[in-house]
Length: 252
Length: 252
DNA sequence: GCAAATATGATTACCTATGATTATATTTGA
DNA sequence: TCAAATATAATCATAGGTAATCATATTTGC
Image (cartoon, rainbow over all chains, first blue to last red):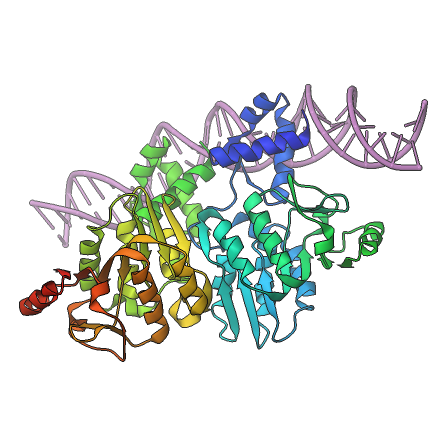
């Protein structure tokens, strides 16, 4: 009974009901409660769930669009740092894809400083954040809205992305490794990210160093689609070298 | 029963009705009232709701991001009346287009009462309002966001609509007359409305009686595309007859 | 094979969530 | 306007979940 298997089980349970209880998981997986709790701690750090007394619940649930998502405040400083770095690659008149996710959301703050940009996104929080800036042209990808994600996913959305071409794409993932490339906990999210990567000239992956050389459930994109990996200082120098051998520039 | 689960329930209730009562929540969640009250206190601190004697209400902040401005409150009673009438034509399992506009926005309140509906719209306020209702599937039309309108317009959006088919379309216009049909002050808005009318089985026009037999700047759709005109009591009976001669049922 | 890293479990002290009780505040209706 | 009804705040007690620490097993890399 492995750790990843337990985590997968937890995710599945969260998908069915909206919450899990520590003792239940412990019994089902034949481990002690403290082990479950440790799993939950790790998963909370990744923003996959929100811990409560007695177990955990799904992350996003608030009625307001975004501001109170539990995930937004996890690793806030790192996310801000990464976004600041990323914004250095944006130039006036760019057409950029912005992927969904709490890290990418923070990029808005920097985007608003530009005079002329076109942003294409499937994220409603991004739209909401940029709506106050007249000089930013925003395109929303059409399709089905997944309420709890505050974003648009599905086949329609994927096809919609194909109708666009951006010169830069800023995307996120739940993991990246030399062996498996980019990976995600969620199929729909992965599909959107991949389509963005396929419809752009240059792809920038924004993810904190804890996700580097970690794999999530599903690999969805090979490394050759990636041009830049933007992360924080916590990344190992040897790993940077390996990525640069694969022609991916690592910024930290 | 987690605390977070209770909070989620409270938020869901607030999404449906605009207020909750402490004893109700306590009974539904099988906890004491004081526990509910403590939940409400915490949520109020986060700005998720506003506490009142006996329970809590939605914060205006929670709806502000995508919501309309004060225009919404003009003729509120008539608009509500018209929407109530219109909602009588909606049935479970329907797939409906909802056009942009302050009148149509009020239809959301009634839509939320249904168990199973699919809504296709280009209006961000509509999306935002329906996002709290899990049982309503919402599709957003893709394209360029016009900030001041809080909606999506343009060629892309028009083409996007063509990929859908709804059995009912609820639309608005700035004027309607026997001579010129539906007319609008805005070309882009008109184009979207027309496309919706062309991709549906039945079209319902919601507009207050002051706009009947008035023409706006640009005529955009002939009367034969219209099936129902839903308006308020202010409409002249002779005019109703004229419209019914043209096979348009007038509801008031 | 062995050291280092990782994963798991047991124990204790601590903290959180909840409810009962009583005093105080707010609302409602005659 | 005042009193009855109802809601709330404040305090305390308690059950149960959690963090911290240490100990033990298992895997990984040299």
